[in-house]
Image (cartoon, rainbow, N blue to C red; front, side, top):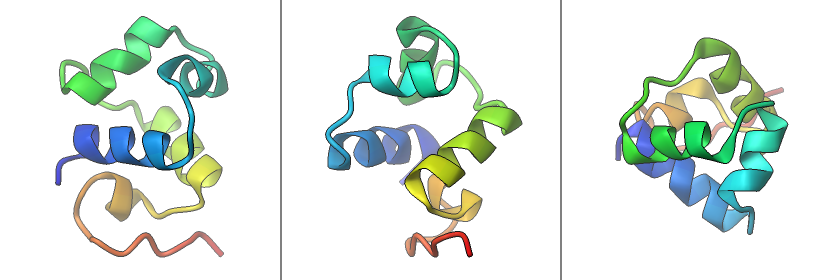
Length: 72
């Protein structure tokens, strides 16, 4: 699973809209939506924020591991 698919899955599993996550990232829904479509590279500061929000590792979001391994 690539990171765009993982972002969508995490968002849907948490019953959030793209707009909800965009607000957390202090960006627009359109900008965030491009992450999920794979049309925009994920900025490191957004990756860190999403790891903290979902309580998962960066490796999990990036699709490098299948176990979420919560941040301790």
